[in-house]
Structures are given as C-alpha cells and as structure tokens.
Amino acid sequence: MLHFTLSKLPCPLDLDGHILHAARLFEDHPPESLPLGAWKRIPWCSVLKTSRDPHQKYTQEDAMYLFEKQSQQIRAEERRKRALDFLWSHRRSVGSVALAILVGAASFYIRKKGLDTSVWSYVGRIQKAIQNWI
Image 1 (cartoon, rainbow, N blue to C red):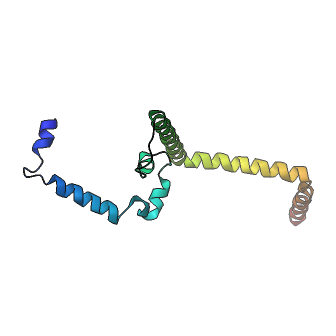
Image 2 (image 1 turned 90 degrees about the horizontal axis):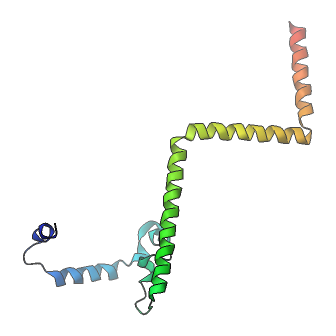
C-alpha cells in the first residue's frame, strides 16, 4: 500500500519548494484569520491551538490531559449531533408532544389564577344565545 502511494508521487519531487510554499501560505493566512469564526469554534485543548506557541513546552501528563479533554469534547459534540438528528427526524411527534405539554401547562396556569371563570361565563352566554336562537 505504501509502495503504491509513493509510486504516484512525481519523480523529481521538489520537497523544499513545497515546504516553503506551505510556510508562506501559513504566514499569509494564519489560522486566526479563518472566515466565519472557524478559529473560535476550535476547542481550547486542540493541538491546533496548543501548538501555536513554540516556546510553550508540555509534559507528557499535560499532553495526556489535553488529549482527554479534547476526546471528551468530541464525544459530547457527537452526542449533541445524534440528539439533534433524532429530534429532526421525529420533529412532528416531538412538536405534537410539546404542544400538548404547553396546552396542559397553560390550562393549569389559567385554572390556578382563577381566570377560567370568565371563560366559562362566556361559554354559558354563547350556549344561552344558541338556545334562544333555535
């Protein structure tokens, strides 16, 4: 597999030129200048952010801690995405249940505050009007 991949590289590979080009691109477009706030969405414990300062030295324990934190964030993001996908695929059922809960909570509130007496008197007037009309 490795031989197959290496055989696809051009024969006179200008490795130094590619490294210089990559360094120039990095200087011209640093990660902090990524559009749409992409740099802000990268976790603080990511190797992309922790390796920005070349003078900062991390011990093996620090690296393991940062790796564990980023793993936890990735797992949390995956759980959040699965939950949103589930809610989106069942949006009609979830909406119906949410509406039923909202109507139930509103009815409890109306009954507790005593606001239902005016509603029932209004319904009684409508029933009397219908009976008189018939």
